[in-house]
Image (cartoon, rainbow, N blue to C red; front, side, top):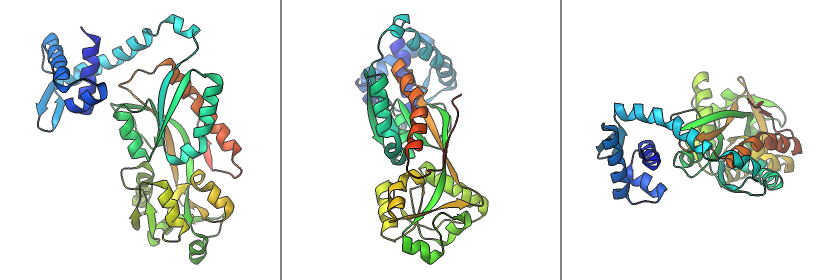
Length: 316
């Protein structure tokens, strides 16, 4: 059986579309269709339903995909060969992370990899968690760091760190509400404030909505903004309050242009996860980058001139 056909089949199944998978692979849609049809003929079973919205797995296709996925990963790793351990690591790894993490550790990660594995080329993409998750599933990323990701058929996740969330306000707006820098405020206070937050597709917003639901309150989200810079600009202008992890606004807090007070009752935290695609075998270069992320994050937190209220989990 042709290994390439198996990989093509998994891509079509995971993306639910021949056209989308073809664009990722870089082959024509008819050629991809023929490869999958030949695989179905080899298997003696129909693996995909074709319909107007794309494709979906038949019961036989679902069982087949679950069986071959770990085999393909193991085979790809085996093909690297014993000699690979003797060679300097090389390759191109694309990593995606949120803007907050990028500003905190992006440069440090780049420098660390250049120091220990100069043959590895790192490419970075930054965006809110919803976008980063899409890029990982679409095959644009090898590694992602994002908020509150959950394991699925497509991605594996590993808990990296927790970060306390802070209500972020213009100093005048904070004073008007009685918020004192360095203190904390009940999370219930969010119900009465005009807020600027990311849209619901992103992990930070989902975390806050879950807290609000448990408290029986509704968030007053007057501005849905999927860009960190604009969220900060809105707070800097005193137009609305926002909620962020402290690394996102460390510079503004230090300069006094923004005030940040921790949310409590309950303490509100976001969980940062390292995610990888289950559809793409992890290379030795990729594993080297994964091993560097945790110590680089610890070092980046320790370098901060102010406490960032982040706790990095121990490696498993």
